[in-house]
Image (cartoon, rainbow, N blue to C red):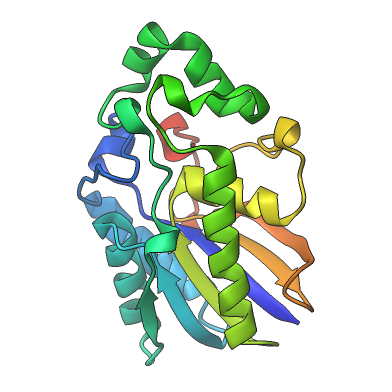
Length: 218
């Protein structure tokens, strides 16, 4: 059995400011994120990790590099363009409130009704495209490391779509499980690289947070 540990990158300045970063935007990790990455590493300390794969966007790449550093053992890292965030077109760099004012239906469908989402309105990527490229990447990794543990460091919107896509969720119910938080861990299992089972969803227990910040989760 192969276990895939999906990690959403550490919290950034734009996350805190409720801005969409997307595939072309980026902002620095918050100072607190570096400590949270160390806590993530502690939670994975007993897991033998064969390989770490990460998106090339700095917020994900830095999270992956700091995670390996905190684990304190040599783990190969591969940067893969297929793990990049959802291309959100005109929404990138905009605050959620501004998107809600300009394209209320687009935002509502993106968050809650992927089957009704029309990417052409904001020149964004489609859910189908994200699921296709991310799923292909995951299946390649599983083929390379059967019966081992691999880590994927990517982004909230792309991971949410891809993980639920791998689990076979219909488009209308793709968001039923809710969002993914910064520095969270979601684990899938597979024995054949084709059918995937959910072991854990959006775990942040190791961060020991006493209050819920809505800007942590997308």
